[in-house]
Length: 131
Image 1 (cartoon, one colour):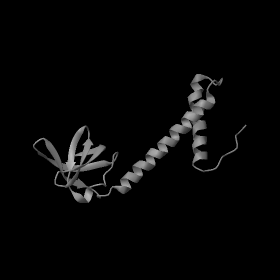
Image 2 (cartoon, rainbow, N blue to C red):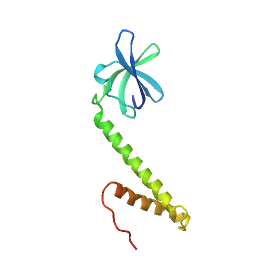
Image 3 (cartoon, rainbow, N blue to C red):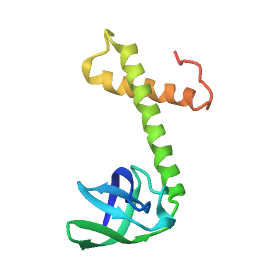
Image 4 (cartoon, rainbow, N blue to C red):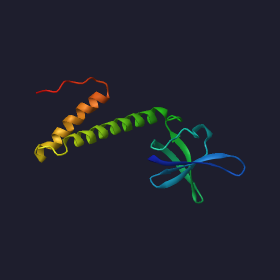
């Protein structure tokens, strides 16, 4: 089974054994393997096997590295990049609000300005405006 971890709950039995519950594709799965506890996070892609035990679905095997840190870092980097792009796009849109640029051309101009803002934010320098 493959899916993205939507939510994580940390739990403990009455006798003190720790486990986690993950929501993946709307379904809940329990994980009891200590090597993986506190290492899987929301947003992480996960490939795993499980077995049903009564009303519970218990994860029996996780494929890949237990810490998932490389995958999480890659996810975080992509997420930050998207946030920066959206912020630059929004700022560029505000700059052009009320402009007399024809509607059909305004989207292209907004993207052009957003790319310049993004380049500036990424410390890649700032080119002087062209005439």
